[in-house]
Amino acid sequence: MQLYGGGISTDLARNCGIILVRMKVRRCMRIKSFDELTIQDNFIFQKVMLKKPICKAVLERLLDISIEDIVYIQEEKTLDVSLETKSIRLDVYVNDDRGTVFNIEMQTSKDMEELVKRTRFYQSILDMYHLQKGQKYMTLNDSYIIFICTFPVFTGNRHKYTFKNVCMEEHDILLNDGATKLFLSTKGKMDDISKPLQRFLDYVDGYAASDELLREIESAVDEAKHCETWREEYSMLSMDHYTYWKEGVAEGRAEGLVEGENLGKAKAKTEVVVQMLRENISMQMIAKITNLTLKEINEIGKAHGLI
Image 1 (cartoon, rainbow, N blue to C red):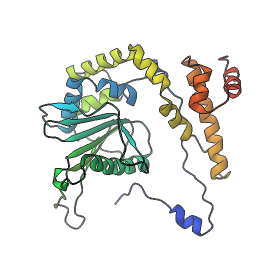
Image 2 (cartoon, one colour):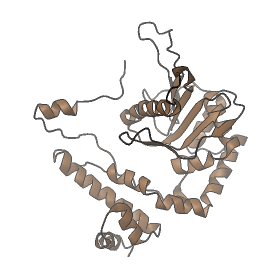
Image 3 (cartoon, rainbow, N blue to C red):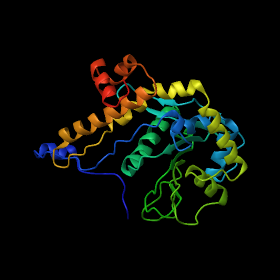
Image 4 (spheres, helix red, strand yellow):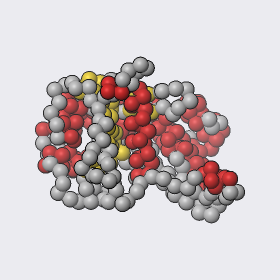
Protein backbone atom coordinates (compact mmCIF):
# COMPACT_ATOMS: atom_id res chain seq x y z
CA MET A 1 0.00 0.00 0.00
CA GLN A 2 1.35 3.41 -0.97
CA LEU A 3 1.06 6.01 1.78
CA TYR A 4 0.91 9.79 1.41
CA GLY A 5 1.57 12.13 4.32
CA GLY A 6 3.25 11.45 7.64
CA GLY A 7 6.87 12.04 8.66
CA ILE A 8 9.21 12.30 11.65
CA SER A 9 7.73 13.64 14.87
CA THR A 10 9.33 16.99 15.63
CA ASP A 11 8.48 16.49 19.31
CA LEU A 12 10.44 13.22 19.34
CA ALA A 13 13.37 14.85 17.59
CA ARG A 14 13.32 17.79 19.98
CA ASN A 15 13.24 15.55 23.04
CA CYS A 16 16.15 13.49 21.74
CA GLY A 17 18.27 16.56 21.04
CA ILE A 18 18.22 16.06 17.26
CA ILE A 19 18.56 19.04 14.93
CA LEU A 20 16.35 18.44 11.92
CA VAL A 21 17.51 19.57 8.48
CA ARG A 22 14.69 20.06 6.01
CA MET A 23 15.72 18.24 2.85
CA LYS A 24 12.51 18.76 0.91
CA VAL A 25 13.07 21.58 -1.57
CA ARG A 26 10.34 24.04 -2.41
CA ARG A 27 11.03 25.86 -5.65
CA CYS A 28 10.66 29.60 -5.74
CA MET A 29 8.01 30.24 -8.38
CA ARG A 30 7.87 33.45 -10.35
CA ILE A 31 4.58 35.17 -9.72
CA LYS A 32 2.66 35.45 -12.97
CA SER A 33 1.45 38.77 -14.25
CA PHE A 34 -2.31 39.11 -14.63
CA ASP A 35 -2.04 38.84 -18.43
CA GLU A 36 -0.28 35.48 -18.12
CA LEU A 37 -3.04 33.84 -16.09
CA THR A 38 -4.97 30.90 -17.54
CA ILE A 39 -7.71 28.57 -16.34
CA GLN A 40 -4.96 26.67 -14.48
CA ASP A 41 -4.55 29.57 -12.08
CA ASN A 42 -6.93 29.52 -9.13
CA PHE A 43 -7.62 33.25 -9.36
CA ILE A 44 -9.01 32.97 -12.89
CA PHE A 45 -10.63 29.59 -12.22
CA GLN A 46 -12.69 30.88 -9.30
CA LYS A 47 -13.76 33.97 -11.28
CA VAL A 48 -14.94 31.76 -14.15
CA MET A 49 -16.79 29.51 -11.70
CA LEU A 50 -18.77 32.54 -10.52
CA LYS A 51 -20.81 32.06 -13.69
CA LYS A 52 -23.52 29.78 -12.36
CA PRO A 53 -24.28 27.83 -15.57
CA ILE A 54 -20.57 27.10 -16.05
CA CYS A 55 -20.02 26.08 -12.44
CA LYS A 56 -23.04 23.76 -12.51
CA ALA A 57 -21.97 22.20 -15.82
CA VAL A 58 -18.38 21.71 -14.61
CA LEU A 59 -19.56 19.95 -11.45
CA GLU A 60 -21.82 17.68 -13.50
CA ARG A 61 -18.95 16.82 -15.81
CA LEU A 62 -16.42 16.22 -13.04
CA LEU A 63 -18.73 13.97 -11.04
CA ASP A 64 -20.86 12.53 -13.86
CA ILE A 65 -24.06 13.52 -12.06
CA SER A 66 -27.11 15.65 -12.77
CA ILE A 67 -27.65 18.75 -10.63
CA GLU A 68 -30.90 20.69 -10.66
CA ASP A 69 -29.46 23.87 -9.19
CA ILE A 70 -26.52 25.25 -7.21
CA VAL A 71 -26.30 28.02 -4.63
CA TYR A 72 -23.14 29.99 -3.95
CA ILE A 73 -22.51 29.91 -0.23
CA GLN A 74 -20.02 32.74 -0.60
CA GLU A 75 -17.26 33.67 -3.02
CA GLU A 76 -13.84 32.91 -1.53
CA LYS A 77 -15.49 31.71 1.66
CA THR A 78 -13.22 31.91 4.70
CA LEU A 79 -14.18 29.47 7.44
CA ASP A 80 -13.09 30.21 11.00
CA VAL A 81 -14.17 27.75 13.68
CA SER A 82 -12.40 29.48 16.57
CA LEU A 83 -9.70 32.04 17.23
CA GLU A 84 -7.24 29.26 18.01
CA THR A 85 -7.72 27.24 14.83
CA LYS A 86 -6.33 27.79 11.35
CA SER A 87 -8.88 29.23 8.92
CA ILE A 88 -9.31 28.14 5.32
CA ARG A 89 -10.31 30.12 2.25
CA LEU A 90 -12.48 28.17 -0.15
CA ASP A 91 -12.27 29.48 -3.70
CA VAL A 92 -15.35 27.76 -5.17
CA TYR A 93 -17.80 26.73 -2.46
CA VAL A 94 -21.39 25.82 -3.41
CA ASN A 95 -24.41 23.75 -2.42
CA ASP A 96 -26.61 21.82 -4.82
CA ASP A 97 -30.38 21.34 -4.59
CA ARG A 98 -29.88 18.34 -2.27
CA GLY A 99 -27.69 20.26 0.16
CA THR A 100 -24.47 18.58 -0.95
CA VAL A 101 -21.45 20.83 -0.40
CA PHE A 102 -18.80 21.15 -3.11
CA ASN A 103 -15.39 22.76 -2.77
CA ILE A 104 -13.36 22.89 -6.00
CA GLU A 105 -9.80 24.11 -6.33
CA MET A 106 -7.23 24.19 -9.10
CA GLN A 107 -3.89 22.82 -7.84
CA THR A 108 -0.50 23.47 -9.43
CA SER A 109 1.68 22.69 -6.40
CA LYS A 110 3.14 19.19 -6.61
CA ASP A 111 3.42 18.70 -2.85
CA MET A 112 1.12 15.67 -2.55
CA GLU A 113 1.83 15.22 1.15
CA GLU A 114 0.53 18.72 1.79
CA LEU A 115 -2.49 18.31 -0.50
CA VAL A 116 -3.54 15.05 1.13
CA LYS A 117 -3.36 16.57 4.60
CA ARG A 118 -5.24 19.61 3.32
CA THR A 119 -8.23 17.48 2.33
CA ARG A 120 -8.37 16.11 5.86
CA PHE A 121 -8.28 19.59 7.36
CA TYR A 122 -10.84 20.95 4.89
CA GLN A 123 -13.20 18.12 5.77
CA SER A 124 -12.96 18.73 9.50
CA ILE A 125 -13.55 22.46 9.14
CA LEU A 126 -16.47 21.98 6.73
CA ASP A 127 -18.13 19.56 9.13
CA MET A 128 -17.66 21.80 12.16
CA TYR A 129 -18.95 24.79 10.22
CA HIS A 130 -22.11 23.07 9.00
CA LEU A 131 -22.99 21.27 12.23
CA GLN A 132 -24.52 23.90 14.46
CA LYS A 133 -24.53 23.50 18.24
CA GLY A 134 -27.25 21.10 19.36
CA GLN A 135 -27.82 19.63 15.90
CA LYS A 136 -27.69 15.89 15.29
CA TYR A 137 -24.84 14.39 13.28
CA MET A 138 -27.35 13.15 10.71
CA THR A 139 -27.81 16.76 9.60
CA LEU A 140 -24.24 16.91 8.28
CA ASN A 141 -24.20 17.66 4.56
CA ASP A 142 -22.67 15.24 2.10
CA SER A 143 -19.52 16.87 0.78
CA TYR A 144 -17.05 16.73 -2.10
CA ILE A 145 -13.57 18.18 -1.88
CA ILE A 146 -12.28 18.32 -5.46
CA PHE A 147 -8.71 19.11 -6.47
CA ILE A 148 -8.01 19.56 -10.18
CA CYS A 149 -4.27 18.93 -10.47
CA THR A 150 -2.04 19.96 -13.37
CA PHE A 151 0.52 17.25 -12.58
CA PRO A 152 0.60 13.46 -12.04
CA VAL A 153 -0.88 12.38 -8.70
CA PHE A 154 -0.39 9.21 -6.65
CA THR A 155 0.64 6.45 -9.09
CA GLY A 156 0.55 8.91 -11.98
CA ASN A 157 -1.47 6.56 -14.18
CA ARG A 158 -5.06 7.63 -13.60
CA HIS A 159 -6.88 10.84 -14.39
CA LYS A 160 -9.28 10.35 -11.50
CA TYR A 161 -8.78 9.16 -7.93
CA THR A 162 -11.89 9.05 -5.72
CA PHE A 163 -11.55 8.48 -1.98
CA LYS A 164 -14.22 7.37 0.46
CA ASN A 165 -13.81 5.81 3.90
CA VAL A 166 -13.74 2.03 3.53
CA CYS A 167 -13.27 -0.90 5.91
CA MET A 168 -9.71 -2.18 5.59
CA GLU A 169 -10.71 -5.74 6.56
CA GLU A 170 -13.70 -5.95 4.20
CA HIS A 171 -13.27 -3.59 1.29
CA ASP A 172 -16.88 -3.93 0.15
CA ILE A 173 -18.05 -2.20 3.35
CA LEU A 174 -18.21 1.57 2.98
CA LEU A 175 -18.53 3.82 6.01
CA ASN A 176 -21.07 5.94 4.10
CA ASP A 177 -20.28 9.07 6.08
CA GLY A 178 -21.03 11.25 3.07
CA ALA A 179 -17.46 12.54 2.65
CA THR A 180 -15.74 12.25 -0.74
CA LYS A 181 -12.32 13.49 -1.79
CA LEU A 182 -11.60 13.63 -5.50
CA PHE A 183 -8.22 14.20 -7.14
CA LEU A 184 -8.29 14.82 -10.89
CA SER A 185 -5.07 14.94 -12.92
CA THR A 186 -4.52 16.41 -16.36
CA LYS A 187 -1.50 14.09 -16.76
CA GLY A 188 -3.22 10.71 -16.43
CA LYS A 189 -2.31 7.94 -18.87
CA MET A 190 -5.19 5.48 -18.58
CA ASP A 191 -8.46 5.45 -20.49
CA ASP A 192 -10.37 5.73 -17.22
CA ILE A 193 -12.75 8.68 -17.58
CA SER A 194 -15.60 9.85 -19.78
CA LYS A 195 -14.86 11.63 -23.04
CA PRO A 196 -16.38 14.92 -21.79
CA LEU A 197 -14.20 14.84 -18.67
CA GLN A 198 -11.16 13.98 -20.80
CA ARG A 199 -11.86 17.01 -22.98
CA PHE A 200 -12.14 19.22 -19.88
CA LEU A 201 -8.83 18.01 -18.45
CA ASP A 202 -7.17 18.40 -21.84
CA TYR A 203 -8.42 21.98 -21.99
CA VAL A 204 -7.02 22.70 -18.53
CA ASP A 205 -3.75 21.18 -19.75
CA GLY A 206 -3.53 23.72 -22.56
CA TYR A 207 -5.36 22.11 -25.47
CA ALA A 208 -7.92 24.00 -27.55
CA ALA A 209 -11.53 24.17 -26.40
CA SER A 210 -13.26 21.26 -28.13
CA ASP A 211 -16.91 21.47 -27.06
CA GLU A 212 -19.56 24.04 -26.17
CA LEU A 213 -18.87 24.11 -22.42
CA LEU A 214 -15.15 24.56 -22.94
CA ARG A 215 -15.75 27.39 -25.39
CA GLU A 216 -17.97 29.06 -22.78
CA ILE A 217 -15.17 28.65 -20.23
CA GLU A 218 -12.65 30.08 -22.69
CA SER A 219 -14.90 33.08 -23.27
CA ALA A 220 -15.31 33.55 -19.51
CA VAL A 221 -11.53 33.43 -19.05
CA ASP A 222 -11.12 36.15 -21.68
CA GLU A 223 -13.85 38.22 -20.03
CA ALA A 224 -12.21 37.86 -16.61
CA LYS A 225 -8.85 38.99 -17.96
CA HIS A 226 -10.43 42.17 -19.34
CA CYS A 227 -11.91 43.10 -15.97
CA GLU A 228 -9.88 45.98 -14.54
CA THR A 229 -11.34 45.43 -11.06
CA TRP A 230 -10.08 41.86 -11.00
CA ARG A 231 -6.73 42.94 -12.44
CA GLU A 232 -6.35 45.32 -9.50
CA GLU A 233 -7.57 42.69 -7.06
CA TYR A 234 -4.99 40.20 -8.32
CA SER A 235 -2.19 42.74 -8.02
CA MET A 236 -3.15 43.61 -4.46
CA LEU A 237 -3.62 40.09 -3.12
CA SER A 238 -1.09 40.20 -0.35
CA MET A 239 -1.99 36.70 0.74
CA ASP A 240 -0.88 35.29 -2.60
CA HIS A 241 2.36 37.22 -2.45
CA TYR A 242 2.95 36.02 1.09
CA THR A 243 2.41 32.43 0.00
CA TYR A 244 5.34 32.60 -2.38
CA TRP A 245 7.41 34.40 0.22
CA LYS A 246 6.75 32.02 3.11
CA GLU A 247 7.16 28.93 0.94
CA GLY A 248 10.60 30.07 -0.27
CA VAL A 249 13.32 27.65 -1.29
CA ALA A 250 15.68 26.02 1.15
CA GLU A 251 18.50 25.51 -1.35
CA GLY A 252 21.40 25.01 1.04
CA ARG A 253 21.58 21.24 1.49
CA ALA A 254 23.66 20.98 4.63
CA GLU A 255 23.46 24.60 5.76
CA GLY A 256 20.68 23.65 8.17
CA LEU A 257 17.00 24.47 8.50
CA VAL A 258 17.28 28.13 9.52
CA GLU A 259 20.07 29.10 7.12
CA GLY A 260 18.47 27.27 4.21
CA GLU A 261 15.06 28.82 4.84
CA ASN A 262 16.54 32.30 5.12
CA LEU A 263 18.23 31.86 1.74
CA GLY A 264 14.99 30.68 0.17
CA LYS A 265 12.94 33.46 1.73
CA ALA A 266 15.40 36.10 0.55
CA LYS A 267 15.13 34.86 -3.05
CA ALA A 268 11.36 34.54 -2.86
CA LYS A 269 11.11 38.00 -1.30
CA THR A 270 13.01 39.49 -4.23
CA GLU A 271 10.65 37.77 -6.69
CA VAL A 272 7.65 39.22 -4.84
CA VAL A 273 8.99 42.77 -4.92
CA VAL A 274 10.05 42.55 -8.58
CA GLN A 275 6.65 41.26 -9.66
CA MET A 276 4.77 43.89 -7.67
CA LEU A 277 6.93 46.66 -9.13
CA ARG A 278 6.19 45.30 -12.61
CA GLU A 279 2.49 45.52 -11.76
CA ASN A 280 3.06 49.22 -10.93
CA ILE A 281 2.18 48.79 -7.27
CA SER A 282 3.48 51.70 -5.21
CA MET A 283 6.56 51.23 -3.04
CA GLN A 284 4.50 52.29 -0.02
CA MET A 285 1.98 49.51 -0.64
CA ILE A 286 4.76 46.95 -1.23
CA ALA A 287 6.34 48.00 2.06
CA LYS A 288 3.01 47.56 3.84
CA ILE A 289 2.47 44.11 2.38
CA THR A 290 6.01 42.73 2.76
CA ASN A 291 7.23 44.60 5.87
CA LEU A 292 10.30 45.67 3.91
CA THR A 293 11.71 49.18 4.15
CA LEU A 294 11.44 51.61 1.26
CA LYS A 295 15.23 51.50 1.03
CA GLU A 296 15.23 47.70 0.62
CA ILE A 297 12.50 47.87 -2.02
CA ASN A 298 14.36 50.63 -3.84
CA GLU A 299 17.57 48.56 -3.88
CA ILE A 300 15.76 45.52 -5.29
CA GLY A 301 14.07 47.67 -7.93
CA LYS A 302 17.33 49.26 -9.01
CA ALA A 303 19.10 45.90 -9.16
CA HIS A 304 16.47 44.70 -11.65
CA GLY A 305 16.32 47.91 -13.67
CA LEU A 306 12.79 48.77 -12.52
CA ILE A 307 13.61 52.03 -10.74
